[in-house]
Length: 147
Length: 147
Image 1 (spheres, rainbow over the protein chains, first blue to last red):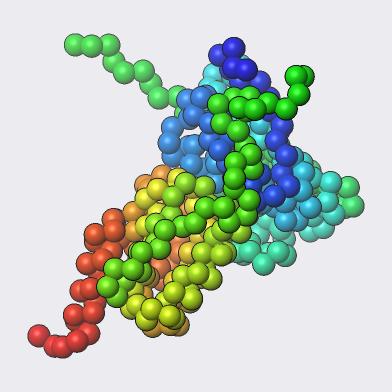
Image 2: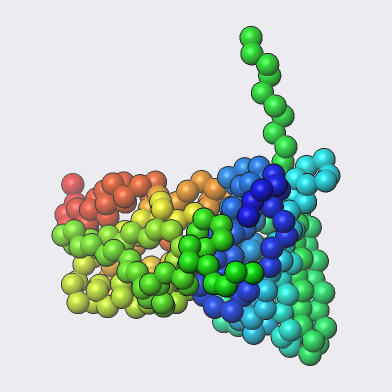
C-alpha cells in the first residue's frame, strides 16, 4: 500500500542472510523515494548492511525499524536496529576501527558511524542493543529557471 | 489481514519467497584462455560470497589459470563483509600463482568504501573488464622476455 506520498514506518526481521539482502533493498528503496542521491543511498545502504549483520551475528537476530522523516527542512531516514542479544560490554572498544569479536574486519560499527549523520548506541548487558542511525538527504538547489 | 499474499504486498516479494534457498543462483565463472572471468551481479548473500571464494580457488587450482578478473560493475553495494571476501579471493589466488584484478567498481561504491575505511590495499583494480584483461596479459608478456 503506497497511497500516501510518504511511506509509513516499516519493521523488517533480521534472522538470516536473505533478510540482510532484503533490508538492503528496502533501505535503498526508501532512501530513493525520499530523494537521496546515489552516493547517499549507497552510503546508507552500506551502513545498514553493516549494522544488520551485527544484529544477526552478535545480537542473535532481531529487527530493523525504518522510519522516513519528512517534517524537517530536508527529508531523512532513520533506521533502528534492535536485538535482544548479550549487549556490548565495552562500547568504546567496539567503536574502535579494527576491533572485532566476530572474525570480521572490525569496521562494522565505526565504519557505519562514518557513513551517516547521526549515530546512537543503546546497549545493556544481557538485555540487548539498539543502534539508531539517521541520514538526511542533501537538498540540491533547484535548477535555475530556463533562460 | 487477508491471509498470505500470493504476489507480495508491494511489488517485489522478499527474496526468500522465490526458489532461492541458500545457493539458489550461481555466479557465472567463465574461462577465457588463461584468465577466469567472474561476474558478480545484484544481491550477493553472505553464504554465496563464501561459497564463491571456495569455487574460484578450486577452479584456479584445477584449471591453472594465471589471472582472475572479478567484474563488480553490477554490484551496487560492497560492505565490509563482501570487501573482505574479495580481498581473500585475491590473496588466495596470489598463493596459487594467479593475479586478481577487480573491475568496474561503481563510483558511489568507491566513495563509500573509502569512508567505511576499507580501501582494499593490494587489490589491483581496473575501470572495466577489457582493461583488466589488458592488465593481466600485458603483465604476462613483460614477464616473458626483456625488450
